[in-house]
Length: 219
Image 1 (cartoon, rainbow, N blue to C red):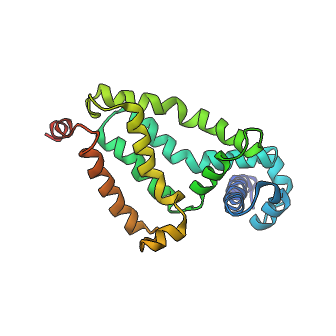
Image 2 (cartoon, rainbow, N blue to C red):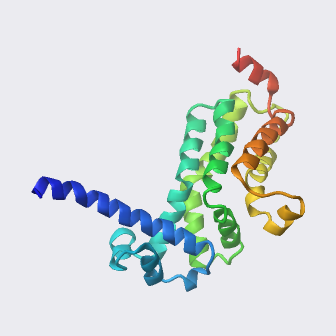
Image 3 (cartoon, rainbow, N blue to C red):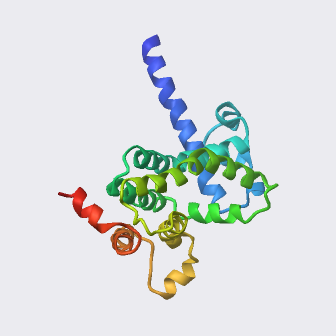
């Protein structure tokens, strides 16, 4: 094997190890208490030397933060698109992206909800708020301001209340107790979320969105 061939192989191995650590950290953090998840346990599940956690992330806290950021990265990207181009399609695609990503890790939104109930002094809470401050807070207000400027949000609608309604429609199916969903015959599957998305879009169009603006856009 040549030096060039060895160089080509190393980045792939490194990337694979890093991704495995993030994947198994997410699986463990969503079902176990933070204090119960050791770096050794994560490394063992990932089949990686525990020293790689320090190499890539610095510590367990660094791995937890990276796991949060990378899980939320597709939603962040879609929010950036929405701010850059405040179209109705991009607005709906944030919810579409959220559903598509969270169906892969349905316990992740529950982890977020549980962490936000923790005291502010807890490590997870501090890390989560740091990630939210970096990813979503700067764009949340701007996003709905842009909707008003673009004429997509109704002029008589309260942007703050619209934001609460939008977030509620987006996250509820994932944070609702599974037993409650089961009582109503609901199972979180891709087909159900596709139907729910279209239903939510219709609710928003007949609620706080300017449907005349939509018709104008589609001309």
